[in-house]
Length: 294
Image (cartoon, rainbow, N blue to C red; front, side):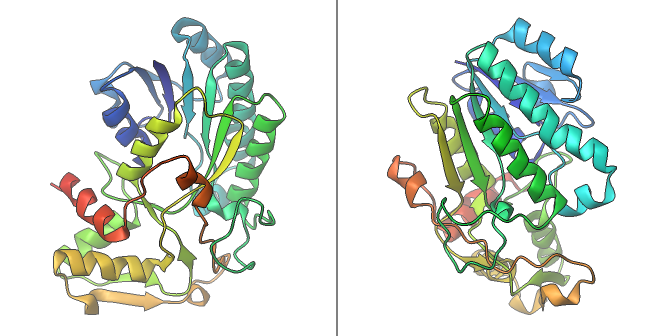
């Protein structure tokens, strides 16, 4: 199978490169940082370069496109030029979906759990009310709509908090807190925001299965099975690694001035699991993630 991966040098993208290259012909796209892309068939391109993307599709002719490239954090979107965020997260996604339709490629798109507003209770199903509160989340929902209005050969993944060890230049909060705890340093973490975290490794494994051509026209909550705060995830890490839990500096969302509070976007992943995908427990996910530490 020929698989095109956008955002190939990102947190998830590099794990997808590692896993999908074993049994498929991949082309991994990067822009500013190559990550591990140079170890594979890869191409440097900005996804807002529509002519370049068109030429790439025409030459590679993918069977599946896994689209992860975007302005990927609420705070990054808030600080960037809004027009660029819109062109990258919405317009480029719409164009990629049209290219997928033209070349009969399946599109797997990573959206976000933040399309839900966090005020509807816990363990939300896919039919929960959509009410994104940040520019980032609004662009991801708009991109979902662009895809659905283009064709039906897609899977949209409303992706929960992804965690694990970032490869090469990539880092996330889990990696930072691991480094801090290992060095005996404190790390600030929310105790009052709840998610259903999914490890980067487990996410890549499930996406590999979702490349199955028989699965399409689906919107899936894409997360773990356990509802937990960031501080709660840190406690699991401390249990696994025998770190001092007193290093967890528990803070409230109220402590961050200007922070858009999203109290609970924990996801019901029953639909995802109904397709036979294995979701690891948080403890097992943490243990497997630590294989990638230096």
